[in-house]
Image (cartoon, rainbow, N blue to C red; front, top):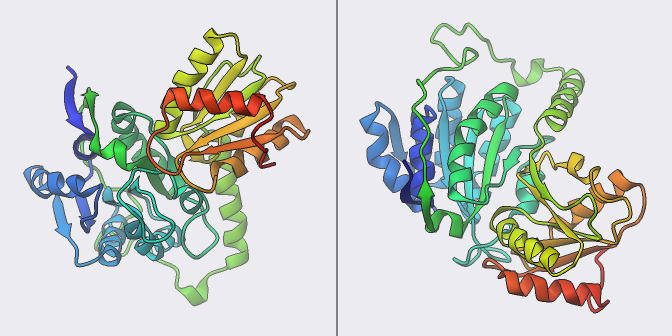
Length: 352
């Protein structure tokens, strides 16, 4: 039965039910409720909660838990996620699985407390040092975020990678009806430390980086082939296709439905995975599409780069790509419609 829950609380409870038994992190708005909830909830189920002295310490504790094969979680926002990047790089280098939640807030640097999508480039490009990618999942509702948690761990463990849940601050703070999943039995991954050193680690001077690069590319190729997720509507005959994720994708879907009802041939691709980017969806578009339009809650337009790239890759021709960056907040359906009509009238310059 559905119950009204705050996004951060619902995600935290979903993590417990997915078998997470270790959380380490540091408070930051707008994700602190995840910590507050797990501070008492994890001990109830025999888990471990640690408020670390810093974000760096928190992610290093996650490395320790992941090394032992435990489902571990951390969450933060803005600069807190940046401080964790060294640890995320280490998790990637050691092929350890973990989930990191980013409830994104706006800023052209240190940041504000406004809900935003300005961390897209960092999350989809790896974020830290090294030659790696994280799988990035982008929910558009609290229910989707709740359903996504267990799947995130399953995928992280399947490929031994880090999965980032990229939400917006508003997703963590708002309330919606939610149906929680059943409990999973906690488990330890067989490749974790077992106290007997059964699975030995290879020292830095004993590694064959050329061989590892071949294996890394093979793994990423498999992820790209198997783990693309998206929602689409009306793209087969659309003259203009919107591309938007998360809460922006949700309001854009409303705009698309209203515009179609008014006679405009528009469609939507909503990436559910920002990496791997859902290039398969772009192959389903009308080959005569006149333009791609991203709707983004940032100032500079970040999603538009990938949207233009994969349109070019799918259709093999130059389709104008436009960005509607709304800086922060969730753009209203009426505003998206208004700006679409400006694009259609030639009043907005394309990015590509």
